[in-house]
Length: 119
Image (cartoon, rainbow, N blue to C red; front, top):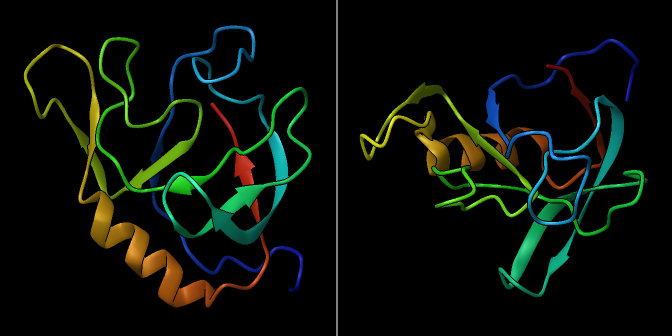
């Protein structure tokens, strides 16, 4: 993988910053290597971020909601094409998540990659 080569771009959604607490916080900003590993929870191969400080099992997957009241995230990263308030609760959600994840998977072909987390 060449540094600086952009293979895929999309919108992402995480939980708010709550001091990097497991399952209720987004992860710290930074660059992370991702490998495709088996997720017992989802029973499929998903990208897993490596070496997240103080955290394990951080994955990238589809889902729409990332709030403390209703979350598909639980500390993971949701992908999609844009943001919308799907359930009209005043909290931004992510849309077209499943198709975005399938596109990500088809581009990366289960190969390791880098992800850059920025605010």
